[in-house]
Image 1: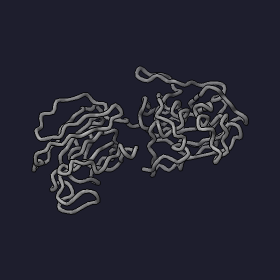
Image 2: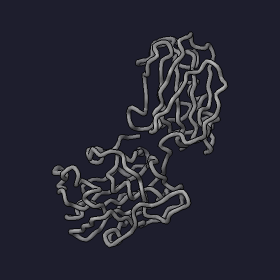
Image 3: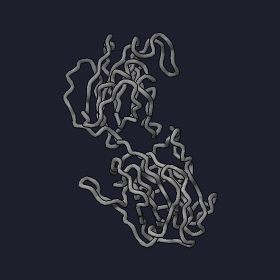
Amino acid sequence: MRKAPILLLSVGLAAVTLTACTSPTESCEPQSSSGRASDVITASGDFGTAPTVDAPLSLNTSTTESTTLIEGDGEVVLEDELVVLDYTLLNGRTGEVVNQSAYDPETPTIFAPSNLLPGMAKGLVCATAGSRVAVAMSPEDAFGPSGGNPQFGIEEDDTIVAVMDVRRSYLAKANGFPVPVTTPGLPSVVTAEDGTPGLTIPTNDPPADLRKATLLQGSGDTVEEGDLVTVQYTGALWDERTIFDSSWDRGTPAQFTTDQVVPGFAEALVGAQVGSQVVVVIPPSEGYGDAETGPVPAGSTLVFVVDILGIG
């Protein structure tokens, strides 16, 4: 899993609402629609391959518009969800390609809304996996607020064209319902609005056995042994009461199979449903044992809070 390309991250804008151009569903309200500018964009080539994009020179729009070029039949991208996609960006004024993803299914990139240009985000929510979406972005929803991007020949008033192949989406955070915790000896967890967890670890000695509990019960698919999972997590050291690792801090979820992590972490995942948040206390015997591993001292009891965002 790769980090988002610099051109998108360098915009430096706050997180925005994802919106779309497909028909609204009962739980998804699009915030952009097709129009004069987006309807004249064409893209040839199969879904998932780098397209040849064609748009009239000097294309401009004051309102971001989006048109579905290929209609997918996968899951609907909901507001604030993480999205796996490929994209081609053109300068609407010159017709030149200014940025393009790798179009490599073996190295997917997961984008949070804040990693995308606002106009790209406005073309995604309510789109379905398997769709190719063309977006004509107003300068305000592209590089206008940052004064253009001279490195790529983009001026402040340029309309930017994006053609995006939507491969799939993931939850941005656990969305299950709260459940009572009856397992003794667990840290207390509070969650910020964006999903980032905070931990309070008891001052007593850690339990000798593995202990886990579901804090939020999801309703999605159940994780099985060997599954590839997408998660957000925070890991802490019981004795030191410090966080040693957090995908939240990196701004990108983690992807791995359940057999690529320490046994205690895998035990917390297998049997849990997508949308769940779980907390687990892992004794050294089911963690890193007596070996010092990076920031984890030998013989450490580990604590993890994990949001299960998707499978596969």
